[in-house]
Length: 432
Ligand code: GUN
Ligand code: ZN
Image (cartoon, rainbow, N blue to C red; front, side, top):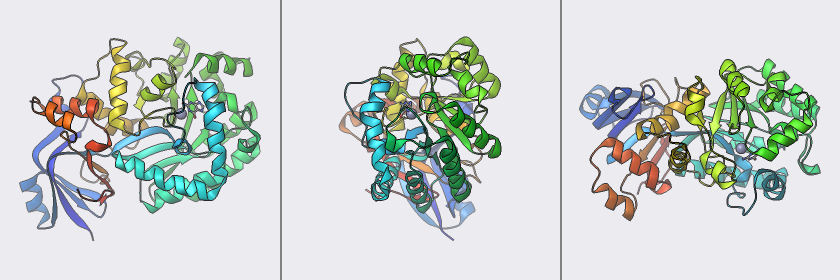
């Protein structure tokens, strides 16, 4: 039995904060103890109380750093680690010129395996302990993804992209093979260890109606799998979708009529939506995923977080590597803050840190397992240092409140601010 106590300043949210003064939305222990036993959280409270309850164990002293639940990134492309920072294009040209050629390389199992190792190293270096990932079209890219996640005992979701048109020959499947390969991967990996399968039709442009029907059949057969795709990211994409699906009432209707929506549905981007689409997202309980660094990098547009929330929709927030430009959920909050500022929407740091932990867990329906530091949940944890760089250190001198510290972390922080990441209780970084 492996047991340890992490000592430090502990912060965990138990509901979404409604405003700057909403201190009841979280638990904060100035001198806290997080008791971890066999990969699970066995207790969380003040250090004195927890250490007495636990008996004497290995204590890892993280003071004066902050201990939070590990970050959750619900939209990221595993085969785009080497696409990040590709110059000059908007969505459709960027896909054609950079992304599709790169994803072709994942036909090679050795390349896929090497990239999987690098991918999970990068996630944990940035404090991310759960992600929902797109793999490439080749089933072996998903094999590499799941095998590596399983080896590291991470709570991960992913799926091979289904795409049977409008992409290079070496990258496309068929409606039947996309169905068969996805089903085989679900059988092999979904529910194994901490893994989940995400049924992954890439987007309407790269799937024929028969392939979306096959994806819908999978959703009906495996209702506890996620379904992920892209929606209304870019004006040319929307126009092309409506040309390819002339009977659709709008973009979302393409997915709706193929049975893809629901509480397990994660829809990347959702920027240029019609009123009727917003109403259907709300009715079906589907989740838009805000991808700020990507939306700015590809010049896609501004996500209307407040507008969607006002309709009762639960939005997630994610990196979207490699359209996105940072693996860091802190930097994602930084850019997200600016995108929302442009629309006179202010994200308070309490809400921001709730969003990348429990908020994203809620969108995934996993809030009972991850996203908090509650007793009985899984010990995925990040330790943050708000004095990690010279400029952070200097700014920290004038910080007086927890909210100010969190804001400093989300504006100036990145992987350098991540002092340690624990996956199911196991440290991922060599101690400094
Ligand atoms: N739409 C379809 N595929 C992609 C992708 O790989 N990245 C982004 N940002 N949008 C997409
Ligand atoms: Zn994406």
